[in-house]
Image 1: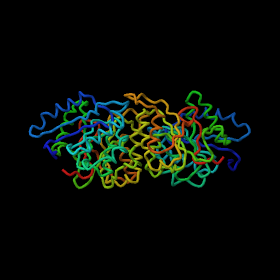
Image 2: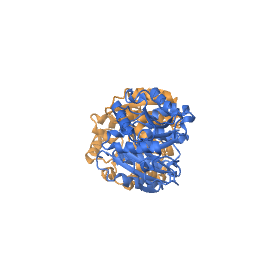
Image 3: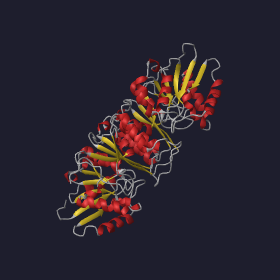
Image 4: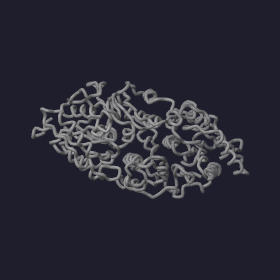
Length: 283
Length: 283
């Protein structure tokens, strides 16, 4: 896990929305005292602070930043700085340009990052994980999420892992809406035999139901070992009241599609979001 | 186009949200004077006024209403009463139960109805058309949209048709979000060689971009003859400003995917929404 000069380097890029410098300073302060015996370098690519309309820089700038970290052997991990929207736009450019250095690297993020994580997993590149990002420091109590995630990135700390994970069964985790927009594209990962964990944020119940309908109706997804439901938070009011909650509709779509419903998953857009390595994790 | 007893019957069902009786009365009043020489019956299935949480009745009730009209030879057309959300939930139940009576029937609607229309077109059942629905009477000036659509349903009036339609090239029209949620499912129609017209409502620019990214990245969709952009209305503010409008992102995704961008289409969630028959229309 050490680079040639003996340091553990984590590179942060922002394929979606931009970060503010104050946030990066807080991450560095928080990490400063965490690993007294380990030489850990956390580096925010300058692209994180760039801006182009909705995005942290143009597609070309964001793709290049991603490649800068992914293709550099000295980085142990590529950490998505935040979500928002934008990683899907980079897939077509990034995938064919990834080199061997990307293969043993950890790629970690969630929310919009799921599009790129899914595409990397589909391509068999890297060690993919769904989990907290630096922008979670903007949540009250977010420090713990960042500490857990750093301990995982630096030392492989298993305390950060989602508790239902079973070493014998591959897993994957994704935002429902992000997964629904990967379906049918050439970047959709093969999730056969996987426990698929799904979470959502800020979507009304009818959209949660609609995304689950597509996901569970897709023949390839019907090959999963089962679905676990993460938290669906900040659900806007449905007009009229939807009449069912997110667990009821997940159970219903699982039943209709013949997919085992396996219960809840400890993931979501919140500070308790646990880490889900894709596939079978190699510690 | 006449039923056995010489009457032209149009049956209205509501696979998504419910209708209110006052709306159905206005449709009947408006139609009353339109066809003095033709025996036209417009019938609102009682299911339209049913209610079950988000929907106009349970899935079972809505599916049965759809089948009541679709499988009845005396109905010339099945007209979707409104959108909302719900038609995708019925596809799995409805499709295998459709009988020969459905084959020569017009199925007309838009918005959420697009999921069922796409599935019917995929299955080669009926004469599918994207166009105004009774609920458009709730829009200021909606009377004209309803009159045009009735003239099309009853007499095949071509004045209601989308003006760019070319008899030599098959076409299809759909809401972007509805299409994105059909992709990958067993109900996705084959649109190879079609002019695909897309419209959207009430989605921020980043979601329009995200849906277009999926649509144009899907290999089957890349076989279309081209894309025409309908109106994208009531776009909520994007924070930060997206930096591009809906036509710029459509042009960009078309360019990236090698799909010809053919210009604008006269469709949308508004009173000017013109009718787009799927495939090559047989008048």
